[in-house]
Amino acid sequence: MATVMIALDKCTKENGCLQVLAGSNKLGRVDHALLESGQVGVDLKRVEEAKKHLKLVYCEMDPGDALFFHCNTLHRSDKNNSPNRRWTLLCCYNAARNDTFIDHHHPKYTPLKKLSNNEIIKAGNKFLVVKDVDTFLKRLTAPPELSKKVGKLYNT
Image (cartoon, rainbow, N blue to C red; front, top):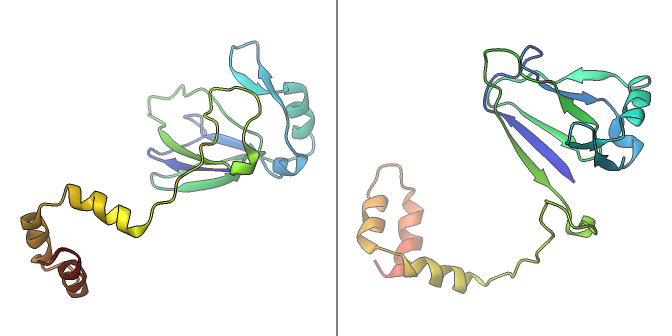
């Protein structure tokens, strides 16, 4: 129920950086609908009313900066009319208890099957090439305690 936006390029007002209404997450969930533009978005009348009471923040970011925001935060970005690229990586997290109840383009929650450590080791052994492990362990950067652990696991 949160998003982290990671800037891959510089994000500025000029190239349409993300904008948020500070504190809008406290308004609760605002339902989304199909807008005239064909995009899905929140009710624009509600947004205009929220803008009367909340501060608009331009989230200018340098490459590598990360911005975490709540899923209910009202946000948008302008069209990039500049000659500069504005790429970002969005990682969205949702709790299983907040699974969608309406079919949507977002996938539904799929429970994970937890495996034992032995199963993970067995899967790793399937692709293990012992000479590659030896080469890695002989590197100066390999921690000495790793050699002991690997030796126990793989009898190397």
